[in-house]
Length: 385
Image (cartoon, rainbow, N blue to C red; front, top):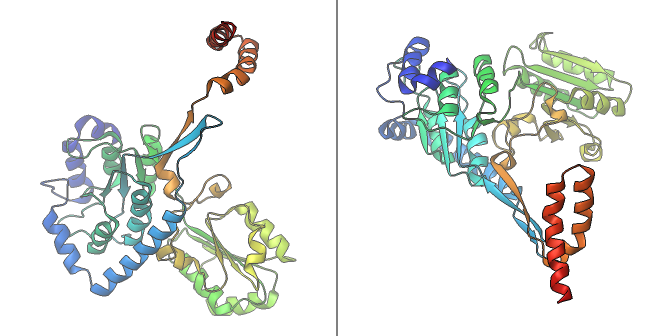
């Protein structure tokens, strides 16, 4: 499919839309009239909730935005520049998440990305999810394309007559979308290849069992393959949480782990490196410094992971499958490039030049050494006049 889209452009995308989604598309871009109708169809209280979430997401990411810096005396600096175009993917059907549109588009906008577009599939003649389209409007998305699956990833990666090639693709999808993103990586950047969602709750005897059970159930609700794990040093908490769960989570989705003490609980979490790590303990901030590996850290009974899903502020796009050992939650940094700047003064060059020549000679690169030595000789000649 990726090869077909790369070669056939719009016609290939339309063919696959008909074949896979039973959608007969006159145009790939969603008409402005449909976007307006979706906005009008979205209830006012839901618009207000999405706008509140958007403000908090914006405020969080503005606080993390890196800046240019220059040290004239040292002749060094770094310039921060945003990507030009970013493509977002939003699944269709039952897995329509307006929150993910906010969580991916807003960091890109805060970073200064010039153009942000969204692809989401149309199923047959059904209307697109109005809440997803409303979220796109709130987040400042420039264009919405009614295509999905592997063809959408190909169109964003390679470009078609209608859909311009982007620099980065972000957003969740099924296993085919995930593998398509992996296959085009290198042609474009991607936010990651994500597996089933996962949460670890670290709880001591002070934790509210009702809250613990509710959070485990919320996590398991995401996906049949989602994992919800409670790690505790309290046998009494296990009994009460199990009673609250009352069989609502299958063994495949979750488990409860009894440890000797909370130091061991932290060690278990660091080993697993979960997407979400929740500390349901008497003094969560005291333990936060010992956490090394987690996509996101949620401290205390009133910071459940669900708040992170929707409205807390950080993006809920977080590394899964143990990849929190080496990767981070989606942020403005994923939409920025940094360019180191070297602007040495004559004196600074003179101070450093001999060392550069010596290293170049050690590496067997006389041309490199010569480029520096020529300048050193020129400076020496000037000084003897």
